[in-house]
Image 1 (cartoon, rainbow, N blue to C red):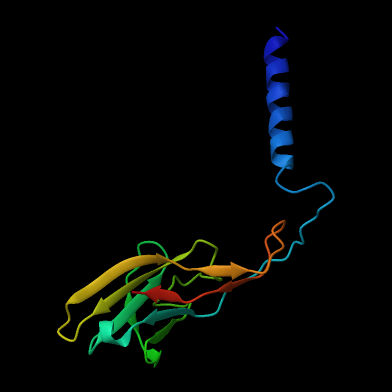
Image 2: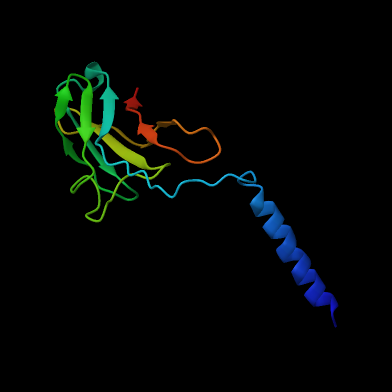
Length: 138
């Protein structure tokens, strides 16, 4: 009856070896959390919006709220209610934003979910500081 124990031990050893390949030997990643708390920038051609408005929200199943333009073709969505849940502490990589463009008559022109792009200054071994890039709606 030692066969099941040997199989379990072999499985554990195989899993440990596979997981140890995630980070090269001798590399220790710093335990620093990088909080992405800046507003998410949306860039839209002003001609697409025309006399209408832009609404946005962060997170799954959110309801877009109107966003004021900070420059022609540029909107900034803060990470606070009504754009994000009350308990938001920053974006996570792979986060998304829902953007809705409404024309002057109140009809929805676009209502789409976009992944928020980012760049990383990491050396590729450990996750590093990232910079959130603008979400470009075309």
